[in-house]
Image (cartoon, rainbow, N blue to C red; front, side, top):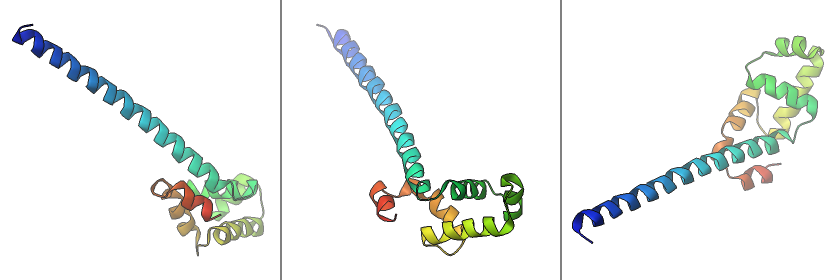
Length: 116
């Protein structure tokens, strides 16, 4: 085997390894996305269905008044559901609740389950 054949084999090997690495990175990104979705489900599962609706609207930036209109609920009901969310998360405002949700990707799943 001459030098050029060895070089060609080396290049083919490097390309094969690079291709495997690219596939592994894609797989890990998919796993990471699945993990994020599971964390969000665990997080939201601590709320009633009605509280989940309110929280998801809060995440989308809707005000209490807009939530009333969208969900066809009384102001007192929306306020009570927002307070339940705040209480369950151990925070002092909806802003903090939203921030807690947005930082899920940085928390380990064990920490999320323990906070329930």
